[in-house]
Amino acid sequence: MPSPIANLSRNQKVAGGILAAIAAALAGVYVNEGGYADHPNDRGGKTMYGITEKVAREEGYRGDMRYFPKHCTTPAMVCADQIYTERYIEDPGFMPFASIEPAILDEIVDTGVVSGPSVSSQFLQASLNSVCDADIVVDKRVGPRTVAAYQSCQRRYGRISACISMLNSMDAMQERFFRGIVARRPSQKVFLNGWLRLRIGNVDRRKCGKGVA
Image (cartoon, rainbow, N blue to C red):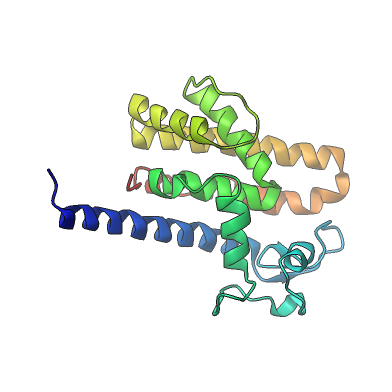
């Protein structure tokens, strides 16, 4: 039987891995989103680090969006880290991937930020069905069945192979999604090159297989 010290060490490793995975996922989002923006064709309006003014106001921020903070320095603060962690990782059920496969977390968080967590969830579930022969309902809600389907895919195809195949599938779906937006709303074409350059293939496949769970 493992000693309590061994268990504690394992728990600390997993907790540290989860925090590192979340930080890495958010760092990737910040690189892609940049700082302050207020593009006339962007329906999100004023944004800072990709957080829209509407969302910031809903969370209680009342200041100028140009000064919206990235990191929280006190528990009472509203900041990008807090909003992204709550709305784009915890609420949509993505947190298990922080330990199971951080590369997948990077992909679904980044897709969720630009297209919405429900779209990201759809791509994840649809890819599990097509790549891993899973048989789950694509209901855009990530729960235990979706997580279990991914873990089954890892066991069947190997952690690295499953991860790379899933990322390729989700990237392909995301590209079709972007092109569909432009086809329906030509005013959004101004964003297409940036979406394709920053969002397709942006997760380093060498990161696959680095989970701690």
